[in-house]
Length: 510
Image (tube, rainbow, N blue to C red; front, side, top):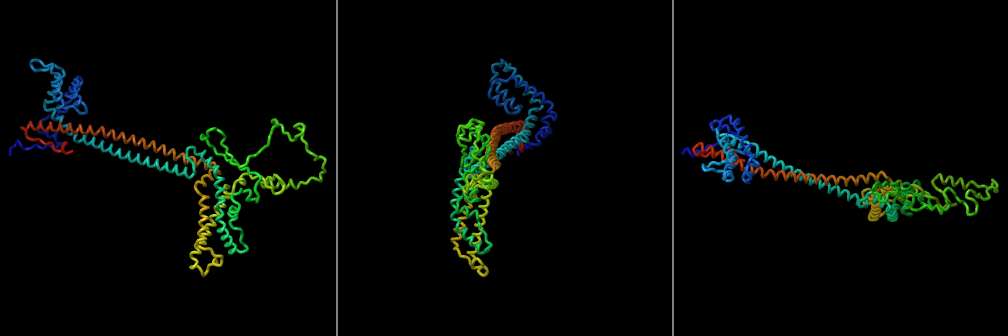
């Protein structure tokens, strides 16, 4: 086999040692290369405007092979300075020719090129690849975060709209809309009060059951529920005292609307049904006219009280009036014409928290009885030997199921989330603040998640841009590293009479 065809394989990691051991370069070459780099820096300061030169000088470390290309370009740009002897008079050309000569002394260029090749392959190219992979991972992470933020934002918006739907409001001005919705409560309660008639058969069955079990000891069952079924949603006053009041004066409801109020009016809201008429007061401030005569304002006509004997004065009516006032009833007329319902007594039975809870408890009690009675009716054959209830008037399964269904419908209509929220809003200003804060918190969370999603999108876009900038740089370094490797292989091959040289582990194996 011809020796000129035997390839020379050099491992990339031992390339520099191989050049030193074969005495192609001096092991102290790094001390000599400093002066060459200084000459290159000085020569770069004065360069002609040329696209090829600009491409060579950008984005890469200038080496010996770049200097050769620059000289070839200068041969065209500096051809006007060529003399009769074929030499160039241009200082630019002389500077770069001196750089090339310095490089070729003791094969400095070969040592430097080998070092650059090793650094590019072992460090620069892997580092750029890792950076690109890292940026791609960041893209995926920020993309996932953006998706999560948007998903959570949509979920929070859905919760906000669902809660607003429960409350029956739009959610633009929460407190004001809640206050406006409170005006609908009396109509809602009135409608529910009129829908309790179907409960009467179940109540009668429960009453008969209690009478049969307890006998003479039985008391009236579900008194409040029976009252509402018979009389509807009356005031608490009427339920307590058995007669309607002459007038109703409920306590005003105070809800602070904060900055949601448009006209700056007072935040006190009075849901009373009747207005108090104080008559026509035409007297000047500080004067009270008690009569229609010509007497002066300061004169008070007490009638014939001074002429009546003391024994004719009957104080029983006054004592009765005092006792009624202490019990919360103000008598406007004699007899049983009624009085003024104030405070909680002015509320309806379904609106008053105490009576409302009692009514719900009694509905649950009736529902439990009907469920148990329906169960016993369905399993009567199994407990026939000891069931006392068989002696009661029997009800069909369908009838019991209808009674139970009626109770459950009423209970559901009275305890819907919308009515519960409105009831708590009316009777607890603190609940209004908590509910409003809860809704506003969801909106704030939506805004925050939206900003986080936008920021995640910006970070992702920045990672995309960085990766896009790195990819051309990586491709350029790989391309120039391939050229550098080819130059080194060719130069070493020349030193061994053209034998093929292969640098193992170079760019070809990346």
